[in-house]
Image: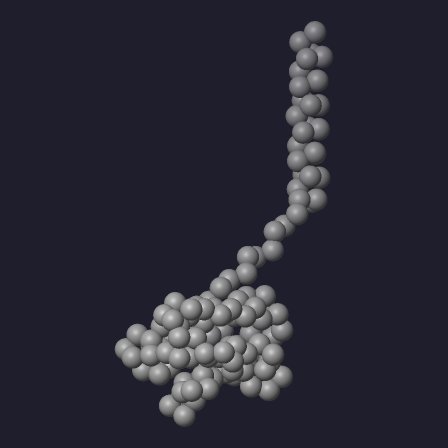
Length: 126
């Protein structure tokens, strides 16, 4: 009787181990979560600049521009990315605009009221 019980236990453990191994092959692997990077519109020191001026992200990530200092500001993309622009001026501190970038490349943008002061930036999508 002990022998049958021992064999049954061993067989049960072996079947559980096989089920775990097989099950691990079918488990869904969750993709890496997309990130959101924040860019300040107007530097903390009062300069007319995007801070940081260049961000590097992965495809699928989002950039969030937040009005920080000396409004009004906007985000105008150049070239083929013009449809990502937010031409309307943002006046209130804390106002924000987000864009998710799905296609790798370099996206240049500027603030139209302060472009002459050098308020420009880049998003590099890998």
